[in-house]
Image 1 (cartoon, rainbow, N blue to C red):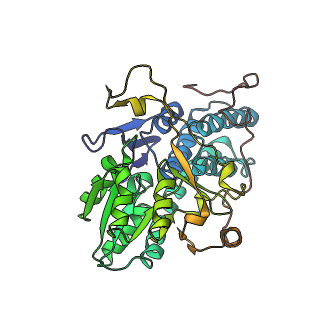
Image 2: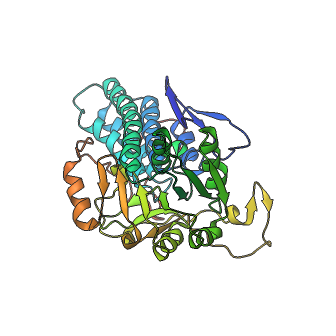
Image 3: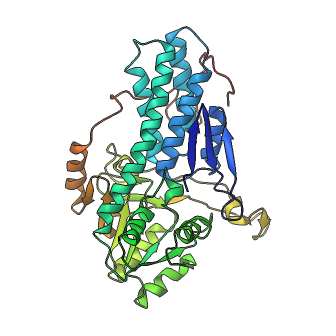
Length: 378
């Protein structure tokens, strides 16, 4: 179930665009391939994207051929900036890249080869930490789940979205493993169908009872009294608790509130963006119209129709009953309790942020190219 595996400078990913029909492993040997895999959703899910990005930096560092520290860090910064430009919403991507760059920057006195090794080791540590974090989220979240409950989930926040085990599905797995008789309703999650393609597949692999429903059926089943709680993942959480997750999450949260059903967000603290106050500051990724007009390459909409395809929406914190993290469960008031959580987190990045070559890679205006001795340039 692990979506990624790193060995001897090669990153292996399960191609999630092909699941569940085909289980294919792709091998990535340079940072351009890693960046494209993130952008094209071969790998997806905030925690998995973060660790994949870290490994992309590690792979790129090995390809930088120079004896000059200045040139090495210029090349490394360029790679970091390109990888950070692949997807704008998941904060784990930026956190991960900054962390591995910070590891390198804080060890600038060492040799270039030693720095490359440290970058690789930091990425491997992040993978291990993610798995441990997910299992802790599962243990804490299990406290909220009662026997014989039916849980609704949206999108995929399982093992495939992380390095293993999962966040929202980690809670479900923990409840199942503890012997609780639970079942899951999985929204199909249009337009990319992560619920029907990935979540349903994952749960069936673990023999956890799952029922697949269309996104617009959630309200009906809530009104009928068939849903006991909702658990979703997150791609970015603001200080006030506003949460960005896959498009359609906001609608589910409003329906849950109307029907007096608890709505839980399960995410590691690396998904909390301590630099923003509200969800209004979260950038929302707009993806290709083809995801809506086509399914598996087959057109289902009229040629030339106008399309809007935001990949995420933001759920205001007033709809969120609790946020389940590896540090514990955060309850309202989020403004106060999330800030208290930040004081408990050890900053492993040494405080070094990547000196971007331009202000965020998605901006249209870029400065002149800087010299960098790296191969496989985008």
